[in-house]
Image (tube, rainbow, N blue to C red; front, side, top):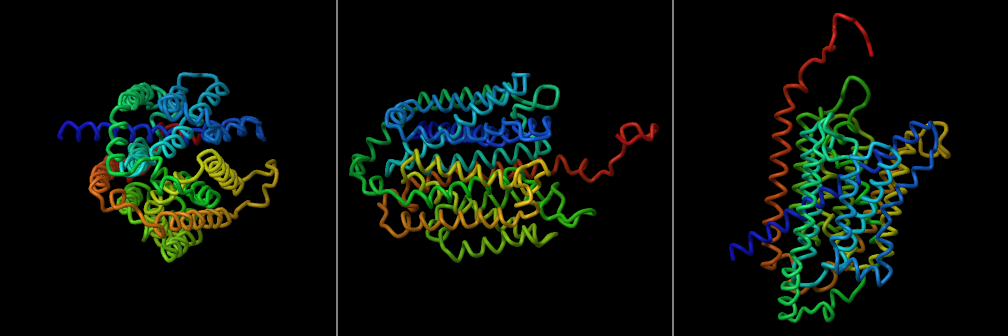
Length: 443
């Protein structure tokens, strides 16, 4: 039993690291793209690399879906290409490598949701919790490295990058995925013994409304990326010019990762998370962080982060019940539209249609919340309004064990984040001074 528990924890940590790779590549893609319009001072054409994340559309092809389902390490290895991109000096070639990585991690997520929805095994729940844990680990790492991710392709040995270490850990995580096939088959056989055959399960056969599920997923991913992938973002949103009217990122960014972890910790309660009243409370807090400055706005951002944590599991579970190709294609396409809209709010004059969204962040936030409304409605209809097998429900022994394991990783990440804040606090509170004050230069 102890050996089995150790193996399961090893699998979970490997999945968590691959999720960390997911968030690393996702956040680095825009960073690498942004170089080109700044260099060209106009639309460069390289922005099309953003569409690399719609790769799950190929899951709509039965042959490709079968190959990826049987050999999930293929997509994981493609994702590591985005980590290895740091070794490429040419910016264009590096962007191409990151785009390949983006396609890989997006395809890996789609294949995971589609493959692991076998009832009674808890594999889907474990995968989603690992995805959540990877985000928290990514946040904690960026808290320590002053908002940089040391595995980004823009990092290297001269500016604090840990690229080789990150790549080596990724290879170990992929090896774990390759060698665990026998464990996965054992879980499926165990489910079949309890009359939970993948082919006979009512929950597996039914399909949710894929359009609202896709919109919900796109809105969720955009909100997590644009507002919560770095603990400093919400604090900066709450500022209103100089001097700062809101909390400093150090140390109060620790509250952001705490709110996220708390939300993830109670995300198994789909009946509460998908309630319309809860969505209304979240919308009010979204308005607060968007329209109100200072600590009240920051408090609204914390509450919104907690809400996103509570609905993440429900939205990903309902996406898993939908046709994988079209659902994730539409979801990622909507995410890309929101990302572009988020850029357009600060668009320069040369950007086509710039005046339409300039200084109108509230429109993007409103679209995000409406997307989440569609997603939670679909999740409530599929996960709450229909009966769930007791062995696959949130109170089953399997589910409780998975939650305990995931929460331990969640809160270790939180403690690491606060430790990073403590390490950085002396420097953050020190009055800035020039490197060479005797020269009296401003550079």
